[in-house]
Length: 311
Ligand code: CP
View 1 (tube, rainbow, N blue to C red):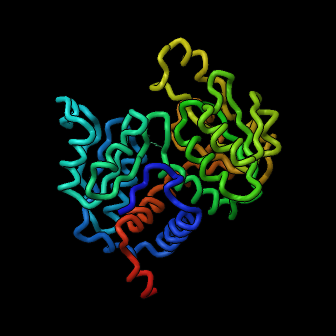
View 2: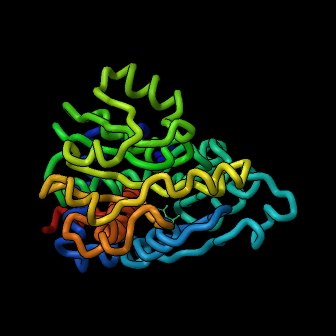
C-alpha cells in the first residue's frame, strides 16, 4: 500500500506517469467514468478548504466512486477529543482511500501509520501540500510543455506557504530549474527547504524583495497569499499582507510567454484586472487539480489499467 504524504514519496517517473494519466483523462474522461465503481473516498478536512476537498470529491464522483467525510473538525469527534490515530483507524473501516487536511504538520504521517487504506495529505499546516504540487506541475506541463530550464519565481509568503515548499522539492528534481524567491525578510523560505533541498541539491536560486525587478527573467510566476491563519500576531499579518500585488503594469514587464500560477484562494495579491491576461493560468490550474487527483486516486488504488489497455 502506498500513501502520498510528501511529494518526495513519488519518484520522478511516478510523477510523470500521473501527469500522463491526467492528460489521458482530460482527452477522454468518459473512458474513466466507471473505474472506481463501488470504491469510496473519505475526505477528512480538519481545516477549511474549497478547491482541494471539492476537487477530490468531484474526482471520485467522476470516476464512478462515492464520497463521505467531514469538512470541519467541529463536526467530527475530534471536537470531543478523539485523536488523529483513532479517527483514522475508525474511518479506514468505512472507505478505500482517505484524503486528509490538518492544521498540524505531520498529522497525515501519523495517520498513514495507523491506516489500513492509502492516505493522501491534502495539506498539513505550513508544511506540505503534495496534491497541489501535482496540480501545479500538470499546469506548467500543459501551459509550457516542459519543466527543465525554467526560471520560476515564487512570490509572497514563502515561510508559511506549504504549496511553495512542495513545489520547490518537486521542481528541484528537473534539470536546470532556477528559482527566484521573492518575499519580505520575515516571510523568507524556511531553512528546511532552503538548506535541505536547494543548497544540498546545488540548485540555482536567489532571494530578492522586488517583484518588479524579477519579472523580466521569469518563465513562471507563482503568487501566494500571506497565510493569515499561521500568524501569531495580527499586527504582523496586517503589515505584511499587501507586500506584493500583481497588476497589469507589473505584467507588462514580463515575458510574452510567462505564466502566472496561484494555488488560490486569492485575497489581494493579484489584481482582478490580471485575470483576463492570457498568461494568467490560475483558473485553468483549478481544473487541472481535479484531473490530476483523478489520476492519483487511480494510481493509489491500482485501478484503470484495463481501461487504458483497451484504448
Ligand atoms: N489550493 C488550495 O489548497 O485551496 P483550498 O484551501 O481551497 O483547498
